[in-house]
Length: 82
Image (cartoon, rainbow, N blue to C red; front, top):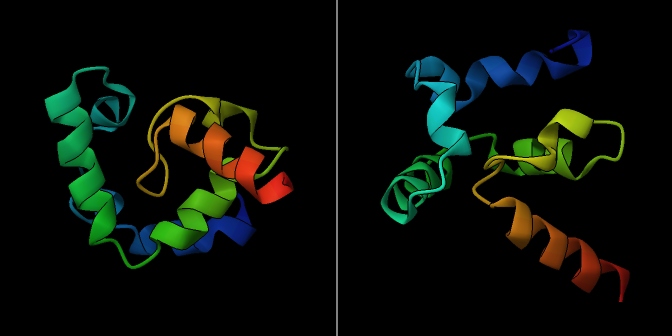
């Protein structure tokens, strides 16, 4: 999943705290909110969001990255293009 350019992922709060990745793909609002709180305190959340927004990262179409759900990322992309 990662290459040398993604070494910053080691600083991600979810990685450091070994949070189960399944939580980042949950559909339950309470779990989504909890994951977003984790991301809000993550030192690399912006880089994670940039990774998810990157067209070459197809696996990031789903799940929470950088604190945003797929829908929120689509809305951000649309607003950025406008």
